[in-house]
Length: 638
Image (cartoon, rainbow, N blue to C red):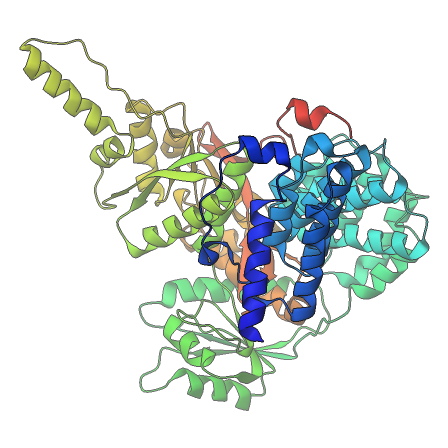
């Protein structure tokens, strides 16, 4: 039976991929196609169809083959929709592609576009969805309008335009009549707002929009701004309600929201800090510790936890001994360790009795260790965000310049993977030696100037005389991603300008900036777009106290102080982040969330250097709004 099913399914797939049976006229003018290989046409999904499903598919194919014109198109549409419902996405799209537009009726055109968009959405092709669906929905019936707006909202969110997703959801509200559907749409709006960082919310709040949109955004800003003072939220919400009377989020939604903000939050009573506060890692470890303690003493809570500090820089004592020592002291939460080796050891356990928030990440981890949360300044997060912003800014072809080190390779791999996932192409990757000051050879190779010079020398030898020459850099790139510390960045940017690349936008991670403003030194990196943590780009009371108490180390380890402060504030919320995938914590190191392995990731703030000072990008340059390419096709209403 299994062999028979395979033969039947294979035959059906060939028919599906090759299209419907030709008419007599088509047979006369179209040469016979060469035999089709079964192995080339069978798909993993369709080969697994059950016997009943295969029979159903056969019926659809027979109906589409024995009819013509709009009726044939109707059966192909029904077959494609059925395949989509069976999650046979590739086969469903193949069927859609066999439709003849000239034979489609107007309702069939609408149905085919909706079905195409649903398939694309299921395949994660969000940009294609936005190109497939019309931007105007007001000539359709209510059911179609609701479906289009729902699909568009999901595609906007998947493509990285949460603001557009919210605007679309609010437009969708106009067509909803059922109270349950209205409530569900409101909670979807709130989940999208939750995904946005506080900085992004403030940016879009400055954009011109309706009172309803502004009300939603200001509610999200108020919530995120007071996440560490949840006792004040009821008062904050009452103030919001006074400013936005009659807003759809008022009263019922607001009362539910106020209650939900305290759910899954557990404040520890005794925190043990495991850090090497002596030895060679003492200086960075103390910065983390002091950032944590500063947040502790700055807290307005009346039930602040007890703090114990355990020095992990002890001979012949492993991480498990330090862990047990913390438990014996009565700790119900442990923050630390810092060492990757120690975290690797902890990650081998299936579960930890007392939860741990580490200050680094295990190198090799494929399974979850329950209660082991990993937190650090992961550079890959930044490279991924650079890829996403550059694509939204219209960049498609990148060159990459990185230090010749494992760290540089990590950043290149993270950027390139995400950039190519989003449709970009990396055209050139070159490395440089970080300890040198002259990176001209690497830059010339990156820009193909070395080949240009070689062509000039060859031509000069052939002609036997001087030839007027100007180096000509490659023209197939529209951006450069660099990775490097401040000294390298300050050398690379002027050398790129010298080598005819001043018109290319350059992007970099937070490592390009020391964290302390230095106008004279950083004038050389003007126009560089980079991203950094809120702690560096914004003022706060904890940061001010640290700068006052530790003026020297606060400059050298500024981001580590932020890491410590965030670790203290995060501990009560980790259970909430774990249970709610759309939850974000507004931290000093960024907008924070957990992945399935309980590793914390960050979304940072975008900035650009001007007169030697980093200035946060405005909403326009952050590409928060969607601007489709104008074509005749997407301007025509359905």
